[in-house]
Image 1 (cartoon, one colour):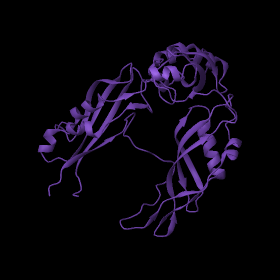
Image 2: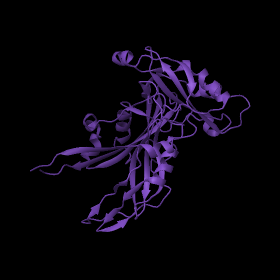
Image 3: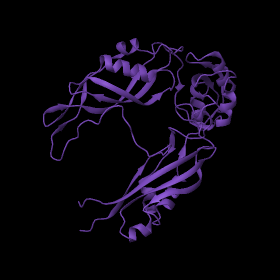
Image 4: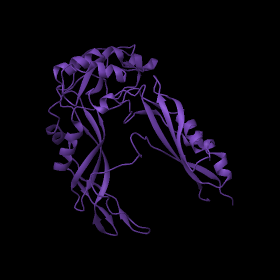
Length: 342
């Protein structure tokens, strides 16, 4: 029976170098072929009463809940040794650090075992800290936008005379059915000049809403994180896009035909193309060019460009930064592999 080919496609955002994950700890031992593995699991998970004790002090509006995704190192005894924040919502209110403190103090796991021996392991831990008080019926944490402030807007809003390297402000605003926001207050404890700076930009935000959402979320509350970076710094002047929030990603079924025909006919079963693109006002990638490809002259760069033009990111990142007008480099890994014969 003949096997057919299918496409395995890897995607990562290339910001200032190769896309990779660098942990603050050494890699735990890996299992070999044929090893019996027991994966880690919760032994003691902090409950609601304990989480309230670790509610972040910097949150002035205590009707806000937080959700976090952590990558944690678990010891061979099941203790949470160290954690890094992968995602935090809302960003800038301390829910990530609070969750780490809580898990290191109260969380215990059944350790990973390889052939019956307990070993260190990495686990991805989704966690939430519930609000101690009741607030609005709807609070939108991760809004999609049709319009946001630009890099230039953020630079111009920086308070005169401030020598801070950066400052995060989290606004809690009322959402209008048009998608605009009003009545913005601070959800944290930002210094007055930065709160004024954030409020001055509220008119530049417009949320993307469907007709159904316009009815459902009219007069709902919306949380918007803004991370201001000192214009005197290299990062402050940079148009680099970091940690984008993708709203349209890759569908392998749609890009299967994009594998370079020249490479396939030459028997080349893997390659990488890197597309360099401009982020348009709606978050789509435009003006895409081939940055590099390997192997060369086999069409992987052109295929990467074709795929990149299908991508779209939210015009505002979860960490409170603009993306419109920035350039990104998108490395696409292509691999052809035989589908196992049934």
